[in-house]
Length: 339
Image 1 (cartoon, rainbow, N blue to C red):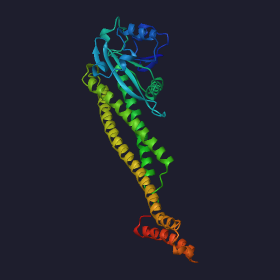
Image 2 (image 1 turned 135 degrees about the vertical axis):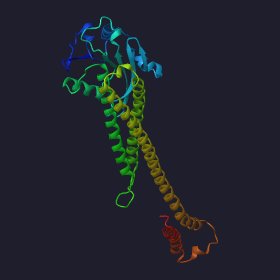
Image 3 (image 1 turned 45 degrees about the vertical axis):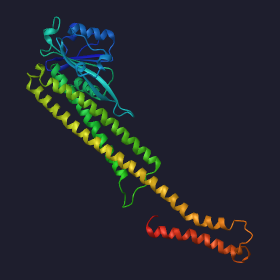
Image 4 (image 1 turned 30 degrees about the vertical axis):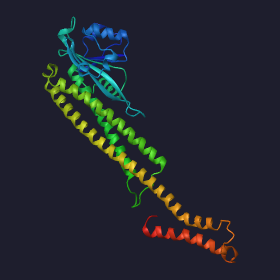
């Protein structure tokens, strides 16, 4: 899918789906979502560049993700995607800021600072919302750098929302692990499993958000000294704000990571305490029933000379001994506070 916008009299105008290279050269933002080979060649022809393949976008080397060519800047980031799903995912997206001088036969009304080209193979919420805002004139896409900074701000806002939701869920997990009405709430096996899954998901979301912020911070550090962003004061101010937001979000992910580690240790501690209580109950039961078992074993022996066998009160006496041998340890354990 190829969607392109150009700025006409300060308003965003979406280009037709069958726009040719000359029309695309006038665009300020071109979004390639799971493009066909024909759409890729069309954009490459319009701007005189070579877009990276999907395999090249997945490379983790810094030189493969952030670099400059004659045709413009090539910036690849890993963005958190499907954060609301059961298993969040990561999406590689490449931002290309074109250089007007490198464009073959650049149009007269093309953006003076070049266009923004985004290449992606998934559809996270920031891109969907950005298209909606662009169509409603909520964002004015004057040129490529402006579109890039606004889109980057939308991505950071989405990460912030996801981390905020994760923080609230961790607070709920902490409440489930805390005391209720002065008495410890029983954490059964089903609740333990549910809490463990919530903590594991929070860790997964936080780790992927942190990975996304690392790649975005690399891009921000690279473009902070790029000539494409040195002219417009408004763009520079937004870029500075984006750097501060990325840093604050990175600090918040570190806080969440520590919180997740603590709550995981707390949950495992509760599980160990319950297991110890169960083992203690079995140990006490074994000790309590050992003397009665001993009495019953003695009187179950088939010795010829056993005076109690001829007593009238022999049987009641044996029962009394077994009861006392069980009750006395129980009372002793209660007094010591072991039960």
